[in-house]
Image (cartoon, rainbow, N blue to C red):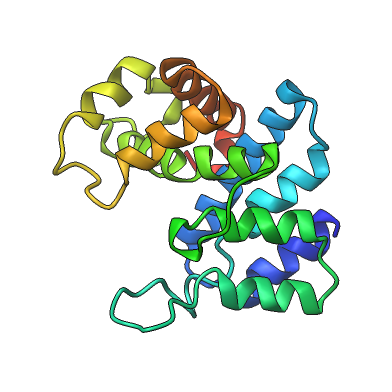
Length: 188
């Protein structure tokens, strides 16, 4: 699946601008990790771009007996001929699906998803609201404040870095730099 097709799916199913920016952030970081780890840049980028496209219409709601995100989206992606490697990575980014993260692309997606959200939150509380002014130190400072960006699962960030086999501080720095390189696209 190429990026143009993937982006079309995102815009077809997601109207929330912040959610689209989140998917663009994960895409940017996934492309950077693909270059670093020797993965296919397009496949990894499309994986990051598509990972939450169904969340707005089919949210993960603990009150539902069968959480729809990301299962609903993956079923649609399979119908549209999306490669299984991408589908499995997307399923694996949600711990409750029970899908094991075997591939490096799946591990990278899990490692980047929550962290991009935390970095975006840190950026938006800066006086300048610019990601260029964010440092790894400022991220770690906000990380310790449990009430800050309370929806971000810090344990998943730690687990993701470990599964990917990268030092947590290095992971934070790498993700921040990838997002900074794409600040314009992300509106940050």
